[in-house]
Length: 167
Image (cartoon, rainbow, N blue to C red; front, side, top):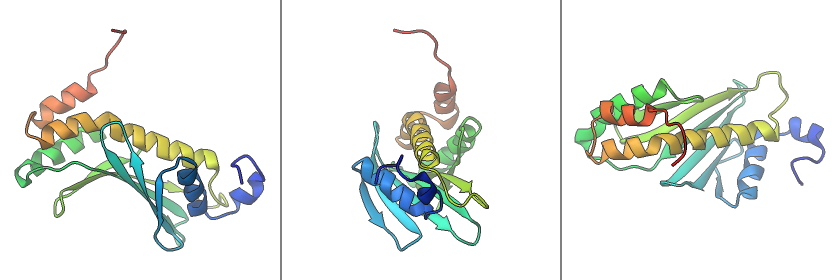
């Protein structure tokens, strides 16, 4: 069924089903993780991202995380954490979180839907598109810090620099 068909039925449906449909329409690899969660492998410009979506029935909220695939030495974790804090000031939707134990960096966002009766296909598309855009925007700085090429302050300054005009 296309997104535009029978929207009332979709609005009352399970938000995880909307995510699964969206991911399938993009031809991304999809894994179901029970009835309340899906995991997708999303190709990006800089790396592949792991998109995880979980529906919390008790909170009537959808948690979306996008894991950024970057490897770094343990000695760089402090700089990555500092960079994440600096980039969080500019991120439009969600926040970067670093798991010090595993070294995994992800962008997280929770979409509250209490009383809405579900999510619309447009909301799902917007959340995923914006979050992936944020990851793509931040990745070059994250990569340079992870590889020890730049310190967090310099990488953040380069990322946050507003460019104007055309080359």
